[in-house]
Image (cartoon, rainbow, N blue to C red; front, side, top):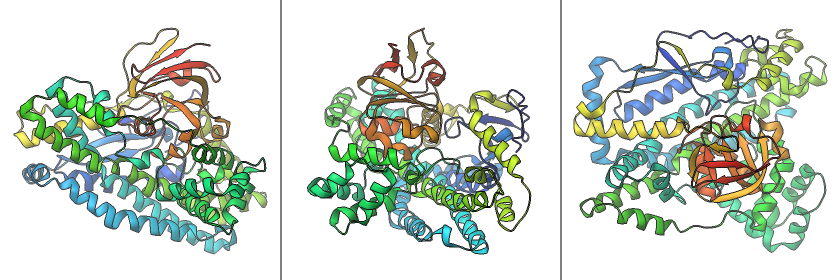
Length: 546
């Protein structure tokens, strides 16, 4: 991976044989050197686990970062493995194997991950010697790597049941997937930021007038949060518990160039105030929608409809939980350690800014802490400048061989065809943008979350813009992750350039109950910051009023 290019001088070569596709949904900006070096191998391992568990005929996805942009290429399983994998697909539906993964997630993977997150974040990297900090960085990096594998391992549980539901109900009713996905609202509480810790924070602050006054005070946001956390009351302990749970999660993106919540105390404090004040989304009657759709299902299929929907509503939360409680949190902890090292070197005059340190590779980080003079301060500053001024819109969608169409499942045995259709529609719904042309005043995208909202645009191009978000803003950005749910109480609507109906932005807006239009391709380029827009989440339209 190289990032030493002037603007407008990017050259792209395929990183290997085959066809390589850009991923602008998860990585709308170039990756750091740390990420590009670390990410491909644990991603590959997790993808292999996903594919083999569900018997899919793909071995893994290889990932590379030309000019810092993520490209992926599928590698098929060996021919001699295909019969065994086809047999495995039969087991998936016969035994509902996603339930096995959900149990493993709830009973083992999720609690183990949370315990490790807490163990690592209890260590204050500012107090460590240089040698101790190097060792700590290594522990954080190894944990981060393991959490990327874990995230990918559970992809099947997050995609197979919902894809299977969509395929069947679309065939039975002819209804569009956007309407069908509305039946899932309420099945993924984490996507709207819900947690036991948040519920306790809300209830204790509402019942403690003194703590509520402190929450609403005009002091420095970071100091207000510290004072709330230090209160020797139920409210203080609830705030501390919530910040320990959510404070080190990245708010946007997966790379350590993002910011974790406690780095943006102003936005975090305002989001907490909004949540406690109860100014969030209105409720909707999902049961009425389910009844309406069920009424259009032929009588002979209604029992199967009920079964499919129950499976999805019981498993769908893992779609975002696997990120929130895995790599999104681990990435924030790694960033905290890197920023501590960066502040140390910046105070010594060895780099220009602490933020530049996160653009070193891992070995480079360790070398700088032991006195190495490479990369230089100017080289790190140039990498930072590159990462913050380039976007995936500059990168070609495909590199290498022309993309091949997906295999036609119609010639496969029934269960294998069912699996391929389910996975195909789910993956497509994560990444496929709208193709509807825009007009001068109407930006067209995908109808991700119903409702209509009119308000001012807050154009967010990166973490540095988060503190600009005001109550009632319409977020317009390239894409979001599941962790952005922490700031959802501030928003009136969400609009993204990239991502489909099962993208994280679509899920969090749907779960929180605010209008969402995703996959517009270029709303960030067409809608100016501060413009007044009308977001129609039912029609998938954003109308610019001025």
